[in-house]
Amino acid sequence: MKNASLKSVNPLWLRFINIVKKEVVPALGCTEPISLALAAAIAAQRLGKPVEKIKAKVSANLMKNGMGVTVPGTCTTGLFIAAAVGAIGGDPEGKLEVLKHLTAAQVEESKLMIAQGRVQITIADVPQILYSEAKVIHGEEWVTVSIADSHTQVIRIEECGKVVFQIEPEVCNADDKEDEYSIAGVKARDVFDFATQAPLEMIDFIREAAILNSSLSQEGMNGNYGLRIGATMEHHRNQGLLSDGLLTQILMRTTAASDARMGGAALPAMTNSGSGNQGISATMPVVVVAEHVKANEETLTRALMLSHMMAIYIHDKLPKLSALCAVTTASMGSAAGMAWLLKGDFKTVSMAISNMIGDVAGLICDGASNSCAMKVSTSVMSGYKAVLMALEGIRVTENEGIVAEDVDQSIANLGQLACQGMVQTDGQILQIMLNKQ
Image 1 (cartoon, rainbow, N blue to C red):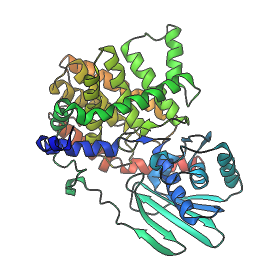
Image 2 (tube, rainbow, N blue to C red):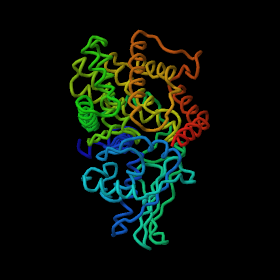
Image 3 (spheres, helix red, strand yellow):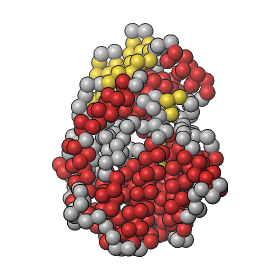
Image 4 (tube, rainbow, N blue to C red):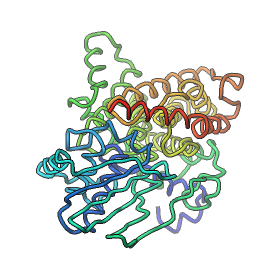
């Protein structure tokens, strides 16, 4: 589309394009340890000398999400290896693909640094939910880089005691933000109209999500990653213990991508709202159903955009990291996409979302790990079930639980649960995980 023709497009749709391009981006590895790796890479570049020691600090939520996940290219889990390989072999310009060019020699050097006790990780006493800080040291010289509020946003750089860069951390109140990324005042119907009516050339970039996450899914089916949930389902399907229906295909192909991503595959995932698993959950069920109904490219594109933008809209009501597992909200996005592919109207889409809120609103996040693929499978299965109910005109009513008559109010109630009701749960989960160490 030529820039001149954009003048006639709904301004809200242009804002949605900005939002999706910000929130749906490629990432290599789990985004929480990758954020620390990026901080270490930037700090090491500015240090300009071999890194002898690393002292890192992360927020409690980032600690929770970084302790048990495999870092790509290392066959090793946790934040220690993320900080070390980031400092030794990370690309400071790579953003969420900071470890894309990591070599075997750099991995071995990083593991030696850890074995020698030259990497420290502690919890930072900071107000930000998402925070990573890497201090790299050579002799008496050092550089500290801090990232906060989003996985790639550098907020402070300090060199040998001198602050050389600093910005004010983001004020996390979406209702007060009136900028190109604001979702203030948006309704689910706005998202639906955008995805189904916007000029195709505005939104066709979203198809890259299908390409990247489908490749990751295939890698998970073929490789020995994580808990091998997708591959295990395929095995039992071949043994006759699972039928080869649409639900099985959705579960196999979606969880296989999560297996690969959490198991350290050296392939990028297309993320959603800062998470690869959310991006996978918003993408793969839609891809599978689109293939089932033999959807053309335009229909697939619109279903993917509906899924991803709806997932962003719902996740915007939540903290960036919390005790609520956000693959559930991403799967609400894919439920919207699947419902539109199978029925094509907003009522069915809204009913499917409400059904999911009535089903898996309490699924907890106990840190990023291979078991995330289990939660992905649970969420996308709930999504498909919710769609089947909606196709029959059945939905969880306003008389049940946190679900309201209006889908937007149901989404707001879910956000209130995550922001206020699960704070103590989040702290308890982290304490349990730390006590296991």
